[in-house]
Image (cartoon, rainbow, N blue to C red; front, top):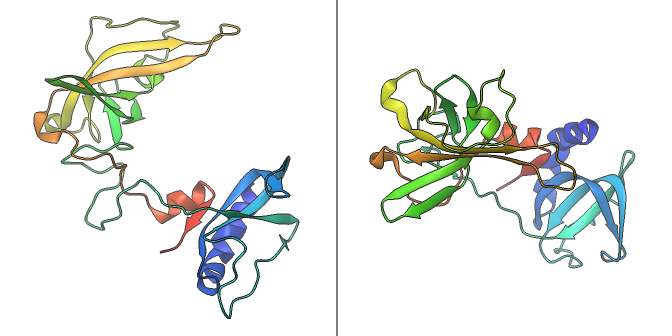
Length: 219
């Protein structure tokens, strides 16, 4: 996996410049063959393109193999759900209007990520984050809700009290039970009406974060 990531970082831009229908390159542990009739477990390099099977005039075919890895060509457009305006903030910066993916800090000092937003009722908005972020390291607990101590939540951190955005309302943390799905979720109630979300986008993604995740996009 790391070898493929390094290859993507070093060579992706060259392929984007020479293939106009290429939309993304990523690593994948599953390779599809014979038009997806066969799926096999094998690390490969995936080339995502528009109109698979049609070669743009004057361009060459994609390679079938690079180093020890097969090339899996898939017809698919690719876009991130992150914001792209250069004036917008990345995860660990202050967001005047909250966005999914933003960094948060719980009162006790743990760093987490702002998850999906929830419209709880007409006058209440919240969001999900991981329960383990809201729990003390020395607590061994299976599940509980509304512990009575409504921990404050800050974005991006607690260095300034003016960045407080809400409090932890409930936690569900269940694990280790055979044949049951584990849950690691906490509900945060937003109290700062001035920072309520205005859209469903994620925070701005940095190129190095996409590369670290094994994906390189080119616009």
